[in-house]
Image (cartoon, rainbow, N blue to C red; front, side, top):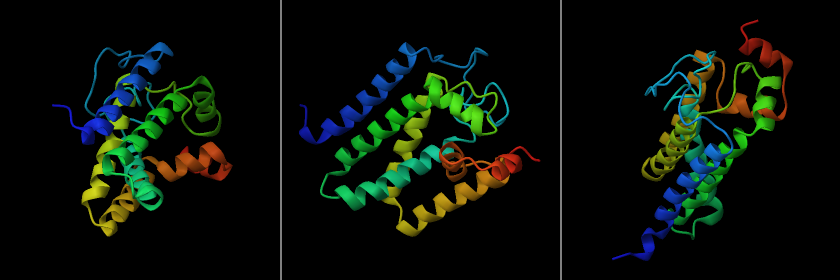
Length: 187
């Protein structure tokens, strides 16, 4: 029997599938051109970055989920969790499609240190959306203080280890700062 309360969850899953199809039709590679799918790829300056299941940018997608949960709780708390999850999934799926457009890839290459960035593989984009879903669920279950600690902790960790993270990524895409770019490049 099909229950109405599961509709948003089915729609969220369908939106992930549709995003994958759109990315494939747009010419994104299904998996890394190296021919393998790794659980983790830790080199940021590499042609395999954003080609495998997870990498140093996966935490930023987990943070998207936490942030989307907080925003949707504030502005749409009357909606059920499932419908808020669907909204978050649609936003994340749309971002993955836009992020992998030629215009945004060129923007990354022009204003960030990601000179060898050619976009995500489809498997990486799907894994990024699933990381957002995981963050959304985490934010539902965890106390607010712990969600905030995770956001701050992952940002500090990625800034310290790879000189990048969600906040720096947004900054450099929207308002590039030459000093930040130099610091990220190790200059």
